[in-house]
Length: 196
Image (tube, one colour):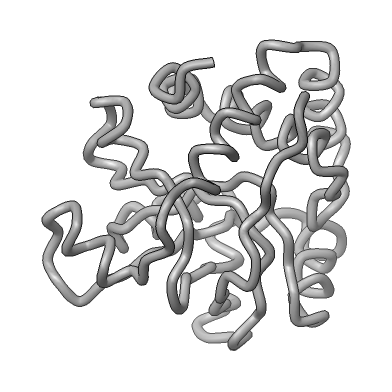
């Protein structure tokens, strides 16, 4: 499976990237940090698609082969201005269900995400969190992390400044400000995929 093709599929739509995230969870056996029917649906779609599993494996292999860099390092590498930023807003969901599960997972101090994406552009990261109920969380990377600069690999969607990553993260801070949980994450381990 070609890395450029896998990245392009990731970038094609939210459904495609969600399906690939589901495939990464299937490959690693690591569950999502909250339960929902649609999360289980993406994983089921992935289980029956060898192509999707292969693409997730290709992405995780590419991430694993990368050199870890801080947000400022990434900014310098891709020609973005300082100071460096890397993060992702998370839409507010059902406050008594999904949001409560996310907060509980974060309070444990470690969170695993076999595949996920975030932006080097703060405005784009903020936009990821916009939804009918507004933003609930802002995940921000602290310290060096492995990843793939999606737009450089594919040649598409440069405005997103998206990094595709994979890892187990230590929660460095968890602070409620302006009715949003601000979360600092530091990569503790990057995840190596098993063969699909």
